[in-house]
Length: 232
Image 1 (cartoon, rainbow, N blue to C red):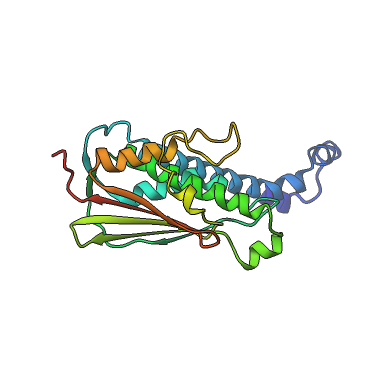
Image 2 (cartoon, one colour):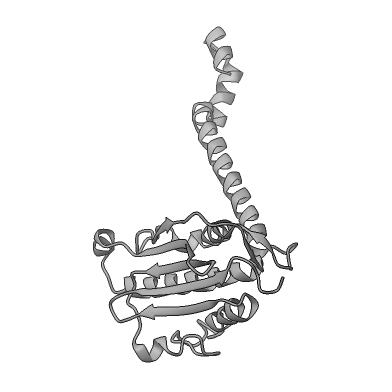
């Protein structure tokens, strides 16, 4: 179109009328932006679909060798909409400190559900705290979720999920893995997420799941599971 306009700079009256009617200068400028937005959008959809497939692992119901970091990354991708910047608050920052982990024998889909439950709870706690803070205060002291992994001395792996939220009272911390226990308003939580997570880690994987927290000091969940499944 640009080459044609250079070769024929003076269009006839009907062509000129058509150009004005369809707003060609605007369209030619905006088209590139539209195509770029479409590319970004389709790439984002691709990432989400791949993450959902990796997260659910529907074709891998049995114990298999799994890259734990892929499961964590898929969980964060699915939760991206809850982490991103909003009108009332800046982005909840995620800090990853991944160790050099081997492949781990586990029920991948179930373990990913544990990551989802714990990280979702961290987001809930941070959002609740940030409702009481000014936007500029959050910018100067951002809400963060840190995820660290390592190989443990007892031939297992450790996953540490830590937020800098309000923390918990001791009486609350002691009950968080109890079925149906929740501190959320009616209709906001079932009180089953952490209870199910505890069963998945301890009963399905022969591991450990516990929580460290105190008021004003944030909350940390620690997951430890063996590298080799006890089921094999």
